Image (cartoon, rainbow, N blue to C red; front, side, top):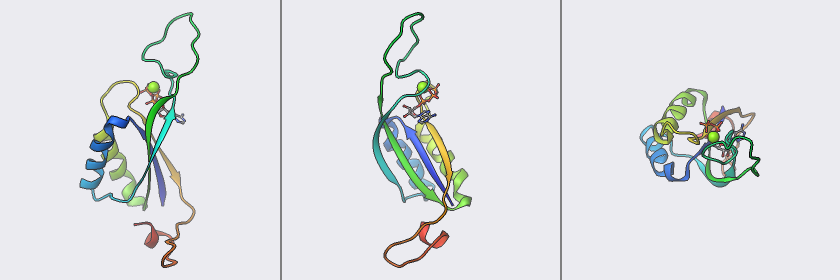
Length: 113
Ligand SMILES: Nc1ncnc2c1ncn2[C@@H]1O[C@H](COP(=O)(O)OP(=O)(O)OP(=O)(O)O)[C@@H](O)[C@H]1O
Ligand SMILES: [Mg+2]
C-alpha cells in the first residue's frame, strides 16, 4: 500500500480528477495548500536581488492505493496536471503501514479501496 501525495496547480484539478476517474481511481482527499518549489514562488529569477520566498496556492491530492495502482495513478495525475512549464507540481509516493475502515474494522488492502 502506498500513499500518493500530489501537488498540482489549482486550475488543473478538474482535468486531474477526470483522468483519475477514467482510470477507476475514485477515492481521494483534496486539500487546499500553499507552497513553494525551487523558483521560490517567482516565475523567473532576478540576478543579484534577494526576494522573500512566496507561497503560491496549490492543491494537494492524497490517494491511498494498493501497489498495482501506483503507476496508473501517477500516469493519470501526470496526464491531467502537465503543462510543461515550471510549477506543474510534484508527486510523492510514501509507504503505508496500515489502513483501517472504521465502519467494518477491515484492514490493509481490503480496507483501502
Ligand atoms: N521538495 C518539496 N517538498 C515539499 N513540497 C514541494 C517540494 N517541491 C515542490 N513542492 C510543492 O509542489 C509545489 C509545486 O512545485 P514545483 O512544480 O514548482 O516544483 P519544482 O521543483 O520547482 O519544479 P519546476 O522546476 O518544474 O517548477 C510547490 O509549490 C510546493 O507546494
Ligand atoms: Mg517550481
